[in-house]
Amino acid sequence: LKSFEPHHDETAAAAIIMAARQIARTVNAKAIISFTCGGTTAQKASKKRPDVPILAISPLLTTSRQLSLSWGVYPEYVEEGVLDTDNFRSM
Image 1 (cartoon, rainbow, N blue to C red):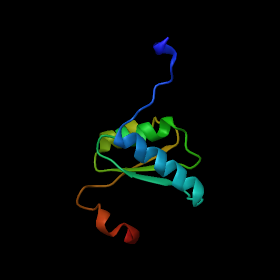
Image 2 (tube, rainbow, N blue to C red):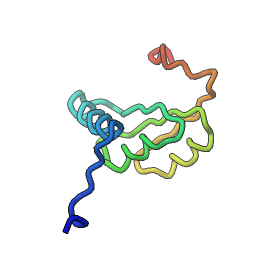
Image 3 (cartoon, rainbow, N blue to C red):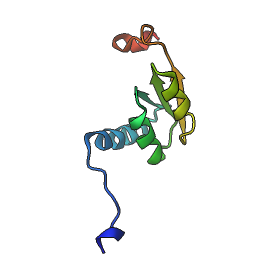
Image 4 (cartoon, rainbow, N blue to C red):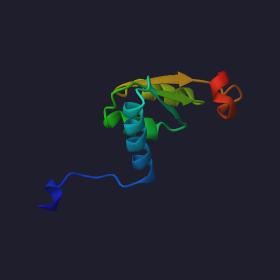
């Protein structure tokens, strides 16, 4: 019967995704922002169907293209030299 138990992802990424979803709901955020290279976190967040869109910023064009197929994910390709995560508010 164990095969019928729901699968719970107990990784750090899963905890962060659930926290981001809850925070977005609590503060009425307009979006969840995810900086990503491979797109895994944004894809996992998409599976949880958050109430707000997920903006996935990636320095890899192939990742951005793949993420465009994920539910609720709006990928943005930004060249690596242009991406300034230390000063995100000025972007």
